[in-house]
Length: 235
Length: 285
Image (cartoon, rainbow over all chains, first blue to last red; front, side, top):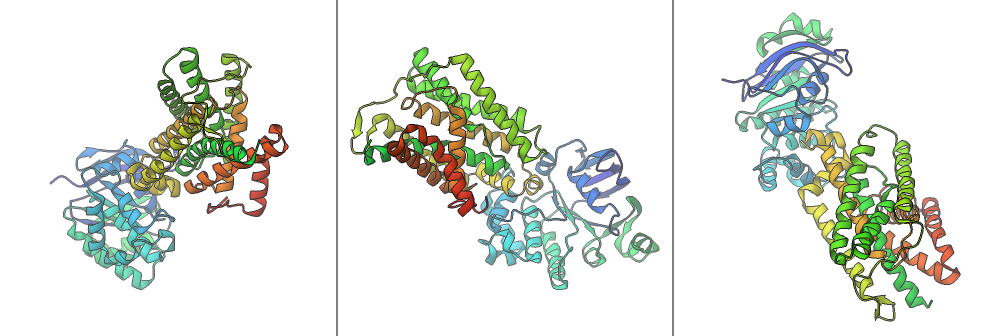
């Protein structure tokens, strides 16, 4: 089976200096991969590089077998690679409904009505908030909205950068539940970059460990998350 | 000039300003850039309509369409070759470049069309159809066109996908990018539409007023004052600001003489920035 996302020897950085070096992994359709590491490990840089917001210095990124390494971010989006950034990047003065419509504004063959129905089905919490401006939502609600905006376009690969950052324990539980619900979207692969191991443990089958921009471990979650690699990455 | 005529003349000028202010607002909302070259685009529209309609002798409606297309192209060119390279530059740098474009345009108009005031051929009756306000057929055409465009643009920006893209880019550019929007394309569309509106305004108003090269600066400040008064980024604000500025200018001109009218824009900006910096309907200054 062709991998939904395959990253080969990827190095990326803010200038010519690599922040992330020689990372390689693949994710099958419908699978969840966690990327863990401490602050400064390069998780966000890796996610931004895959989404096209940071230049790739070396290596390749393939989406469903197609090389997208040199594609602009909006082209990657239309090809089915969607990022939920760490900062969420919502539109503070636009309503929840506008966000869902905006999530499919460039999607071919996907009507806004379908997207709204899907969003409220996957994330019922948004139903009563549909007319509220994003800037007035709580942190947890904003994160749910950011994920919903990305998921409604039914991407091949969804990248979630630190989705639990700044959330209360209850909001993290709801996030885990939402990520579970998204498995209903057949064949969507999800890559979750997280500092919190709880979310990764609950949702991901495989885990990649990053430390100081380098890949130190990649394997099954139940194996990797008990190894010394985790300690090495976080301590 | 009696009060009715002053009010009527002010409203006509105000509706012309509304068109420019709407273009100004579209560019600002989609890109965050304050278009200090829009007065020049308005004068450009006037000269193109004059050249094709009055000098070459094409039918006036066709000359107006050509003016609108050239205005749209001017917006595209300003965006592509002046604003896009300055995307990461400070607001001050962008404003300086746009003011420079206004100055260069004035000189270019002077070289191309001469210093004489040009009278454009009318596109409708010049005789008053509503005597109490002094409105001619041309004035009524301008007002009707402006009203139709205000409604059409408001609906388009509220309901269309392109309108949503513009609101997304204006609210958070990175957010728009991660939702698959190419902000450069959205900016190009906004600048082109802004240029079309400014040129249309010029093509419609200059048969009423005489056309001279230096009017670009005056209309730039008039439309800026209208947007400041109405509130930056607000479409209803652009309409109210345009009309109020036009009427105030006509009333001052009627009371104290035409040479005082240009000071109205400066006075409006001064008072609004001191008393209500966000403008009448704006959220932020």
